[in-house]
Structure formats: structure tokens, C-alpha cells
Length: 467
Image (cartoon, rainbow, N blue to C red; front, side):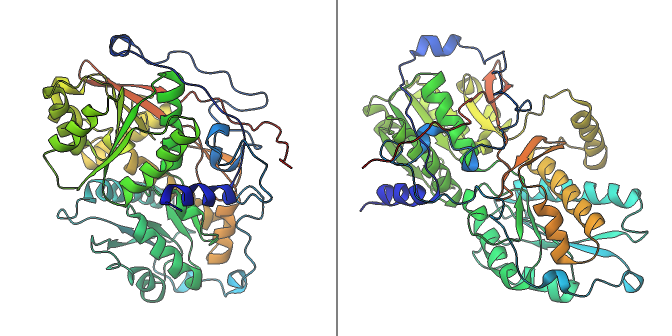
């Protein structure tokens, strides 16, 4: 059994919903003239604007993405029941913190901060969003007159190097919850540690969808993960843009591999298995070999799963080689750097993104002004989701008191409920994963033009078991 077959079997166990979707072709000329959708798709009956209904399948998996959908309904589906994160341990009965003897109510932070760490470009904004949320909470009076204090830990790039930080937060610093991290491997380590320590984790930056599939009831995730991004991108490319032969070019790290897995499997189940999958190392600058291979396969579109610097170089080299196929990308490409590097070669690029910074709603605009005044830069997705996540965690502490078990109960109460934050409308499933629709952005005249995801495949059709 190859790795793709194994992935399909694994996802069949996790979920299973049925049907299929045809696809067609879009010419380069049509692509160059196409405009982002303008009208929002009608919502299903009883559904709030921009939110999936309570009956949505696990992680908003579209029907066409379900493994073995043409054969039978699965015997068991996980993560779709109210008791998904049921907890029967003794954390609630632990003695509450004595506020009279505390100088501050401490909350931990783990994120990549060292400028030599490539992921610090995401970790530093995450820290800034966290700091602003805490400063504003303290300006409102903190916790019964005591300030909140952030215990900052740098998530080192060497795998496992930060594994003791969560232990130090718990025993040395006595934090009541923590926020982090960007790296999914570090987040999985946090999960294994808190399985014993029983410390609430607010995860605001990890793209890896598997962090909420562990069954460990101590984590809440508010960032739009690769599953939501992959589903949306596949739907847009194959159903809306009508492409057939797509190539994949991904960075060879965990971020790239997880994103590729979701998109690849979804495309294959739609009958549009990518023609070729090629990889590159995070520090690569020459992509000519991969591009020659992609060009030889006759693809009519390319998906890049990487970051803005890499995508900018790929686009510039691709257009220089005479390759004019439409290009699509993951959320880490949705930064001005891609246009600064690629120049005119970036025109037409479409990326999926968890944040639309051009929104005009007052909550976002007021946050932008406060963030700019405090840090003299624009907030990105990592800053915005960290701000929302810290506010959710602080609100849980305010509600539950200084008891980690009850704090996590307050976080679990968000299951199958919407949340409106500065980053936009969120909706948490029973695994406490944000499954709200994402956004798209297209480069037009050197700027990103944004529009909301318009996938309507929220519900499943009746399934008849094969005999």
C-alpha cells in the first residue's frame, strides 16, 4: 500500500461523506481576463452569513473530498459528536489559585522569535497580537484588580529543543494557560506534555490540521488550518476555474507536506489528481529544474505550497521561461513580498488566506489603528488570530476563575458556536477547530484584491450502504 492509499484509508476512518463533482478547462486568455467573484453565495436555510450550520460534516469536509464516498457510509465517524473532547479527569477538583498571594495572573507564550529562525516572521507578529490583547485586558482592570503577565518563551528551530518550556511554564512560572506555537511539531509536543500537566492551550498559528485530531482535550485552535485552505483551493481551481491538469510544487517541510496532503487527496477524489508533485528545500533560490519538469507535463495550472519569498522567485523564473499558466498558492504566500520579488510576474496569482485586511468593519479597522499605534506596522493574520486567541483565553479565565480544569471547560463551551473577532467570523466545531470559510486574494495591478470563499457544499447527501 502506497502512502496516498494509506492516507485515504486513514481519512475513511475519520469521516465519510458522499458524491462527486465534474470539472472542465479554463484557457489562459480567459484566466487573464477573469475577475474575482463579486456576489456572495446564498447561505443554506438557517445558516448565519459566513458560517457553516451545526449539521456540517467533520471539519466542513466537502462531499467530494470524502474517502470511499461512492461505496458506503462509514460505520463510525469521529469528531462530530458533542463529547469529542470529553474530559473526566480531576483538574476541576484541584485547589483554586489564591489570588491574594499572586502578584499577577500568568499566561505562557511559545513562539519563534529569534531573527535567525525563519519562522520568526510569523512568531513576532503573533507575540505582538498577544501583547496588545493582554495590555488592553490589563487596562480594563486585569483579573479582579491583578494584572495579567505574559511569560514569553522562544520556540527554537531545532526539533524538540523547546520541549521543556511548557514544563517550566507549569512548574516554575505557574501559568494558568498558554498560547502557541507556529511550528506544528512543537504544538504536538505541547499536546503530549499537557496530556499529563493538564494546561489549557490556545493555538493561534499552526496550519497543521492534525493537532485537533489527537483527542487530547486541552487545546483550542482558532487559525484556519490547511484543511480549510486545501478544500477551498481545490474547489476554486477545479469547480470554479475549471482546470483539469494541475501541478504541485511544495516546500519540503512539515508545512508543505501537510498542505500538499490535503489538496492532493481532495483533488484526486474530485477526479483531478495532480499531474506531478515536485518539492524544493526551504532555502532554494533556483527552481528551473522543477519548472522544466512541470512545463513538460502540459499542466494548465500550478499550485505552490510555500511562502512569499519562494513563490516570488518561482513566479519570476516561471514567466521568464515562457510558462504562462495560472498560479495558485497557500496562505503564507499572501504577503506583499511576493509582488516585491516577482514584479509583473505576480499578476493573476491567486492565494487562499485566513485574513482579509481590506475589510471595512469597525472591529477590524479599530484594531488596525491600535496595532499600528503600538507596533508601527500593519497586523497580519498571525497577529490578528493571536489577538483573538488571547482574548478568548482571558475571557475563559475571567469566567472560570483560577482553575485550569474549569478554564478549559470555558474554552470547550465554544464548540459548535460562532465567534466574532478582529480576524473575522470564526466557527468552532466539536474538536475546537475553527472551520469558518476562508478568503481568496488575487494580484491585480500590483495589489491583492480580496473576496470571500464561496463554497456551498456544507451538507452531505443520503448514503446507501453497499451490500
